[in-house]
Length: 270
Ligand SMILES: NC(=O)c1ccc[n+]([C@@H]2O[C@H](COP(=O)([O-])OP(=O)(O)OC[C@H]3O[C@@H](n4cnc5c(N)ncnc54)[C@H](OP(=O)(O)O)[C@@H]3O)[C@@H](O)[C@H]2O)c1
Image (cartoon, rainbow, N blue to C red; front, side):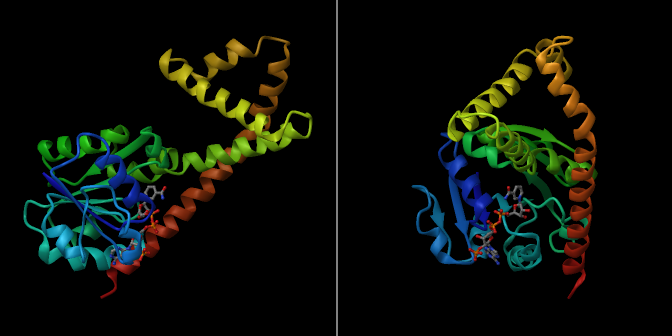
């Protein structure tokens, strides 16, 4: 099996590097990008194509790793080079299968990875159109599992799913940035040590919950004993933070709806 990666930006580069170094790399990996400078340092064995059509023509699975505004022109560009058996994978959550099918009526998937793929810990989301078969799903998921876990979602849940895996590293980083900034006001511990303590504890708390199948409530109950110091803090979080969390998802989901509307318009234009 050969794969093609079109768009060698943040996601295209990351996927190429993770798959190429996995030890389970497909026979050939073809890459193409609009600006050629980005293709100067691809991993050993990866084949650089002079245009998108060449990358698509040689590949069984074609990953479209371009921004929504460029997706229509890229798919139109490669459509004549695709066959009835080609499998096209879009990395964008906002462009629907209906829109993509106007340009390519074959097998389609959407894949939403997280930046945590860089440490092989992506919680990647995938969804398929009705043309894909079990064999296609298995082949794609084998590739995706080289950099983390895979969860399949229905198309109408990919938006909120993206908030939970693809946006979440940004949400988590900003929440813990606020916590650390506040902590630093109350201590002479050097800033970098404050951040390290919080990060190590944050990662280990996640591991503990996953390994021991514990809920958030289990952790809170275990640490925040009645009338103790931790409970003072967790009470503040449960009182003040829900409004912020509600506002966060209201804002991001609204922005997602607007992005999808804009993307739809670009697909409807001639
Ligand atoms: N970043 C994330 O965490 C993340 C997570 C999940 C999904 N996604 C989705 O993944 C997609 C890519 O995002 P990204 O962050 O990787 O964007 P990016 O860093 O801007 O990369 C996009 C790449 O596409 C190339 N490109 C644009 N038009 C092209 C064309 N006509 N032919 C060939 N290459 C072309 C660009 O080339 P130039 O060098 O010429 O600009 C650029 O290298 C988006 O749809 C995004 O929504 C991103």
